[in-house]
Image (cartoon, rainbow, N blue to C red):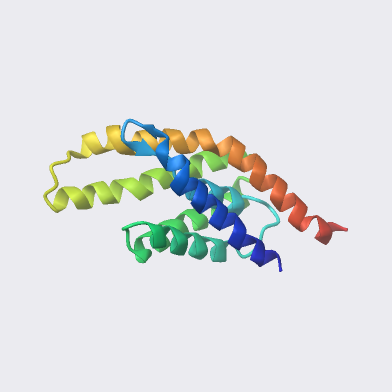
Length: 165
């Protein structure tokens, strides 16, 4: 039953991503709300089935973007794995770990695409892509970390509060 909560949360995050968040740009970069939500959910102590969330998020993002499903699946599964690994290692500071996971995840999403575009002959320098797209996107993602973390933590506490009683 608790896994069904994933559907409206991810759909809501996707709608906010496509309608609101993608319109807020810094230079040529925009935030990735789904990355922040997925990372915040993976860092919650009592959450389960985080891998299912990663696959669901990848499927939804691939559905609305031109990027293939395997790209989002690999990206979100690696980010989820890193978040789970760090959750068990640095468990006393989840917000700082969230900042790290979101920043590295932003780089992991953008840098291979920039390299691939460069290899395909695009007239886009790697440094230009980093400074105009990747770093502004990472900054916008980092601005979303705290509000998303508070909302996701509250939701996780409400969902898993019944197990403690």
